[in-house]
Length: 84
Image 1 (cartoon, one colour):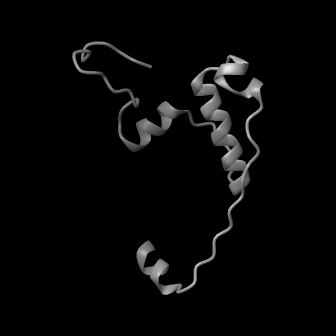
Image 2: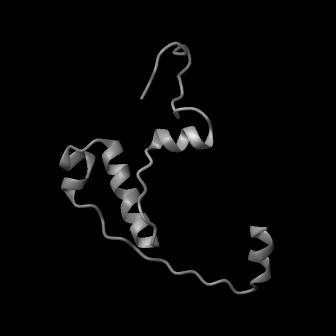
Image 3: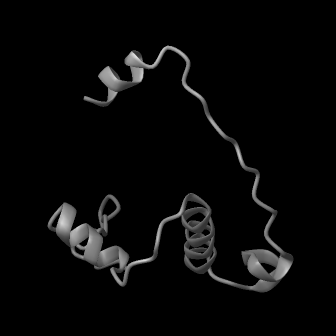
């Protein structure tokens, strides 16, 4: 249905907003934060700018609801190991 509505609007309009760069203390290198913490922060900033509210669902909760797994993928030869 989405492509149909897209083609029905002959002149779509888009608004681009450039968000401020992360401060050094908000990054992996300068702030020593983990990549997961930085990704969560960036996701929250983008969501806030788009007008979304945060939920209490974790990544694992979302994967369980959508795919029925905890979202981990084993590398070749690591089928027996558990990654988080």
